[in-house]
Image 1 (cartoon, rainbow, N blue to C red):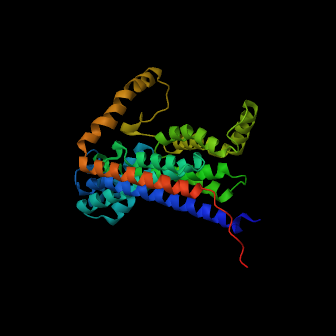
Image 2 (cartoon, one colour; image 1 turned 180 degrees about the vertical axis):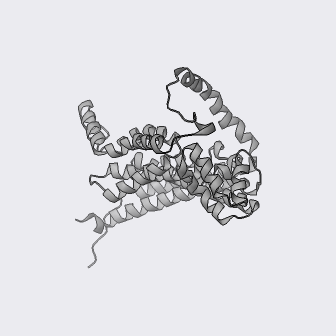
Image 3 (spheres, rainbow, N blue to C red; image 1 turned 45 degrees about the vertical axis):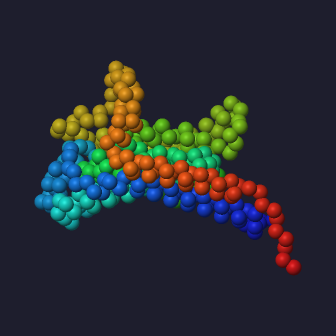
Length: 328
């Protein structure tokens, strides 16, 4: 019997779709509850004054000159619409906060979908991952600034590319359109150089999602690893190609000549990991204390209730259904 004509299969697929939509809605609403105070702030800090000077005076030449010395010219894709339209400073700040918030929400939803694919359909795990991402204290209103807007343009682009990479790796077909779109999205997103390292950190998760059988012997796992590397060599080589292209055609200059230079400073790496634990503790426990307690309490209650509802919906969708009698 065709699976598409099986009422039980259709009911199960409908239940999974409904559960996925509930998960995405939960992540979206949790993000709004956690970050809405940022929309009421008009604070300016860091490089905001530089960007506002470009915008209010419509100086695209200043913008291109800055990013040329920075060595990452695709960054102008974010600021150019503001500079071209030349709105007021107040309008620019408020529009940037709204766009930034939408970028945070989009990133969390993409993390939810990626987590569901990697966990082989575990929507509860994916929801926890998405809610954790959208409520992460480092994404608080403290960072909702116009000069930081580029981060939440390229990060959702990177996550969209990773989602399509997972889709391509999990399919037996070559999926050329998805492959080309994923490569282009990842290539643009690598303008944030930290994403070059993050990409390789997520490759094992993509490989795990591509496995047909989780219970494999060592020999079979080695064979699958070799096939994965050969089949997706274009993805795996992309960060190296990007860096070579960037260093050749978009080198850093001026005060940024030594910025993000490739070097192996083992002492610096050791001290960075040494600072990792106190930095994480500060970000996780101390920064949230500066946020409104009411918003976090409301978010926690909302998450608990909807996770309980999501678990019930998931169990109902996965429950076996009795075959229906054919019509007379």
